[in-house]
Length: 103
Picture 1 (cartoon, rainbow, N blue to C red):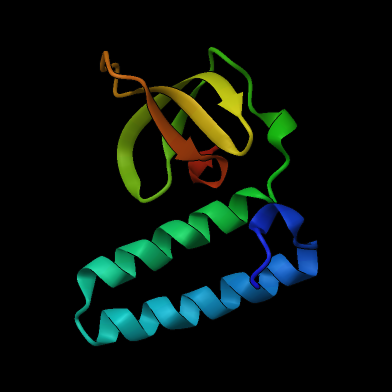
Picture 2 (tube, rainbow, N blue to C red; picture 1 turned 90 degrees about the vertical axis):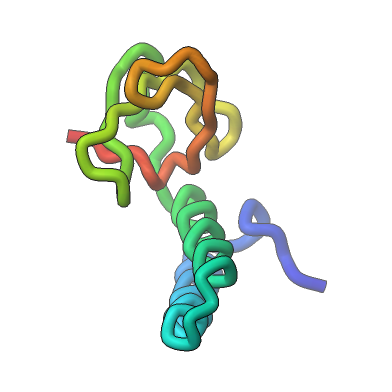
């Protein structure tokens, strides 16, 4: 049975991220866009367990990795997910913490 990301050590997470990157690269080379997107999101989620969550503060605005020019106003953190508003929209959204770019 596979471990959850939350149960993995830092070394195990890094190994899992490397394995997911290899799978994502293979999916991309084979033109499997949806499969690539799933692996890419899993990588972001796994990386979130390696991020210091204390660096994020409610009310601050961050850029989103992989989405240049977009902004994300953080409302609150729930586990490794950041909840807030993208580009000033009215709908609350969640992103893995690793996708927030701190300056």
